[in-house]
Structures are given as C-alpha cells and as structure tokens.
Length: 350
Image 1 (cartoon, rainbow, N blue to C red):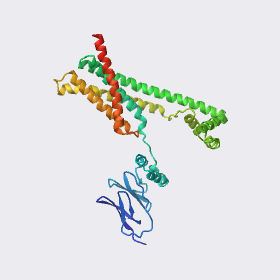
Image 2 (cartoon, helix red, strand yellow):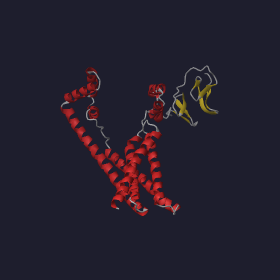
Image 3 (cartoon, helix red, strand yellow):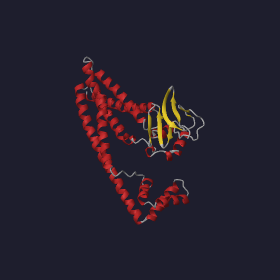
Image 4 (cartoon, rainbow, N blue to C red):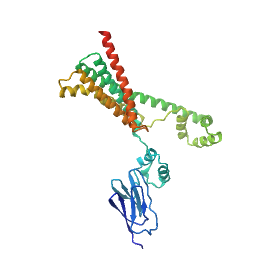
C-alpha cells in the first residue's frame, strides 16, 4: 500500500502536525493544508467558521485546528464551534457560508447542532431590573439634591429604598411570571379539550388562519391535517398561531423563580452605583461639597446606562454605540425629570 503522507496545517508562520492521512492540497481563507504528495486519491472534508480554520478526517477520526492552534483528535471531535458558525455567517451576510453550513449539517456529529443565543431569555429581567434600579436610585439622589437635602439623608433614603424595591421587584417578577404561565397552561387545557371533542372545528380554524396569512386553501389543508395527526404537537401549534401564546416548559415555576432572583440582584446591584460616589468620594476627597458628589453620581449613572445599552446590543442586531446612546438618553431624560421635580418642590415649599 501507498505510504501515508504527512499533512501540515499552516497558519501564518506556525505549523501544527495533523497526522498521517491521504488527501489533496486544500487552500483555505487563512489556512493552507499541504500534502507532500499531490497525487492523492480522495478529498478531505473541510468546514470553515470564524474560529476554526480546517478539519480533516482520517480512518474515522476527526482533527480540528483552530485559530489558537489547538488540536483535537478523536472519533467525535467537533468540526467547528457550531454555537457561532451559523450566526457568524448571518452577521457577515455570507450567504455561501450559511448555505454550506446547512448542507453539511447532516454529516456533523450530534454535538454540532445549530444553537441560538439562549442567554437572551433573561435579558428582560436584567435590563428591566438594572434600568429600574439605577434610575430609582438616581431619582432619589437627584430629587434629594434638588431639594437641598444632606448627603447623609441621600444615603439613608437611597439604600433603604433600593433594597426594599429590589425585593419587591423580584417577588413581583416571580409571582407575575408564574401567574402568566399558569394562565397559559389553563388555556392549553381548554384547547386540548376542544381538540379531543371537536377536532374538525379546530382543524378548520387553523386552515382559515393559514389562509388569511397567504397560503392557498389546498396547501393550508394539507399542512394542518398533517399536523393534526400529532395531537399534542398540534395543540401547541394552535396555542401559538391562534392565541399567540407560548406554552411554558414543565418546570416553569423554577424558571419564574430564576427570573425573580435575577430581577432582585439586577435591581440591587445597578441601583447602588449612583450612591457609591456618596461613600467613596468623601473618603478620598473629604473637602468636596454636595455639588461634587452629585456630579459624580451623574457621571457614574451615565456610564452605567451606556454600558447597559451596549450589553443589550449583544442580543440584537443594532450597533453597540447606538444602543448605548439610546439607553443613556432615555435614562438621562428620566433622571432630569426627577431632578426638576425635586427642585420645583423645594422652591414650592420654601
């Protein structure tokens, strides 16, 4: 038999030995795989992503070389970090990369399923809790400063209000989310009962819905009647299409509890930032007056608001600086209103 050839993966001036295998030379975007003999018999499977340069298979084993020149060899070594491959194609508007990825999905190992960002599920309690916390704290600072109250009063009012509100927001998020999920499940029970007792009516309703959305009646009938063969699946589809409700998971109570906890910590943590200047600055600069403390609170609040907007952009398609400025401007508007009202009340009382 022909002697196996040494394959080298070259990136820049560095080389990593892949192993002994037969294959032709392949030129990739940032990687060149050279064979000592160009008269090879079979091509090597190659998959590209933003993080992985090439992948090669030999005798049932797969090896992956990434940008950091890390080598993984084994029967189930992943071809690429699929959590970002499809999204990288989308973010780069690379139609060819997206098409190639989906065409090759069937040949990928089970660990290479296309994933979406699941962290965005907790984006609402993080952003809502954080924004509410920092604006509540700054409203207290701005209102107290506008009302000519002392820094000591600002700290007392600020911290007592922040942690009380954080607990209230966390408990409220948990109870409201749990109540909503229970209501959705009660609606699902009703839909399931109707499907069991009068399936023809439910099927006809779904056909009408799909027809209203642009499908011709014949195609809608085929689609709906096919889905109706799987009753539980069809009930979930009816919940989404007919009632526009997303059926919660079986452990929805735990999910609601997590949302409540995240809301509490987000509110409490972000709410402390406008108050930190009233603690740190007097220690470092004891001669500064209340006006300087308020200016520091304004600066810290502005930076945190901009940062929160930038974090929000990670889960959207918007520009990070646009999202940051949007959050900063909206939050700054709320803070300005609080300061103005506090100042007006102080003048009115005087």
